[in-house]
Amino acid sequence: MGQPDLDVLIDMGFERPRAELAVKKSGGLQGALNWLEENQDKSLEELQTAAASTAKADDDEEETGSPIPEGAKSLVCNDCGKRFKNGDLAAFHASKTEHTDFSESTEEIAPLTEEEKKQRLEELRQKLAEKRERQALVDKEEQKRNEQIKRKATKESQDAKEELARKEQIKEAARKRQEKLEDAEAKKRIKAKIEADKAERKRKEEEARALREGRAPAAPSPAPAAAPAASRPAASHNEARLRLQTAKGNIMKTLAADTTLFELSQQLESENGVPVASFSTTFPRKTWQAGPDFSQTLKEAGLVPSAVLIVA
View 1: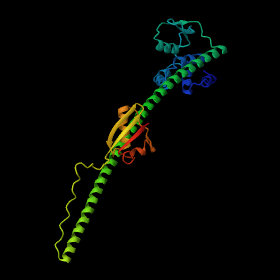
View 2: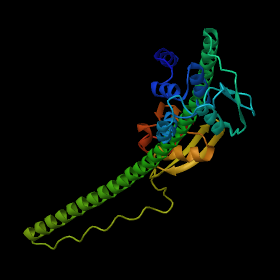
View 3: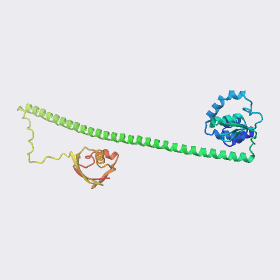
View 4: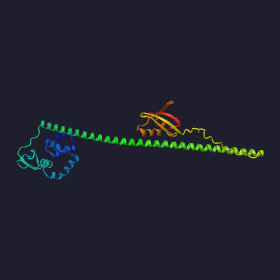
């Protein structure tokens, strides 16, 4: 095969190594096109490996391939009717199709005319375009599946992050609540210590005054009498009675004054299945948005001892 025919195959878009193999395996442009068409589904590596395995045998044969018996111009496959210029092409056809019935023919295979070459080239171009189009569809579907897998993994990761953040927020609210309780207890202890110190200083001052005046110290003041049973105890405001106006109706709740708005929102979400975006009151008009506002306790928000909250 001449160099121009090799250039034609390369111009059609075939890789140079594949085109060179087609040139080597055939005796003309027609044979090269047939060989390329029959091997279009094989990778270049497979073709090169097969060519290397037969290189030694090819070196022992004539340059034109296995000879045709004298007097014959071609070989014919009696199974399918195809004609071949030499024994190599017939042997290759047999290995591809498992056809074994060949006969000699005195009819010479005419070379392709320019019109036939153009037609064969156009047919091969169409087949290549169809193959590339099918591969593009396969690649597109594969990319779509990969994107779906990636989106699913991203959503699962985001859900896990949100759940972790929610748990951390609950833990932070509980920690702040515990800190406030501990601070209140510490203040009580400090106040009691100050009162005890004041009483002790007063007692010592009274004893010193009595000694200077030469009289006996006065007896300690009795503890204040308990309030009558009928008297009403002072309100401690340790609880908040709430009427919550939700989309599903009013809900009455009594909670500890140090319950945070976040804990209240989690209770409502678990009961109604709807996240809480904000709480608000009509008088005085005030709104607490989800986020930093929800870290306030009911007492800090001014919702003790009772309040009406609109839940959004």
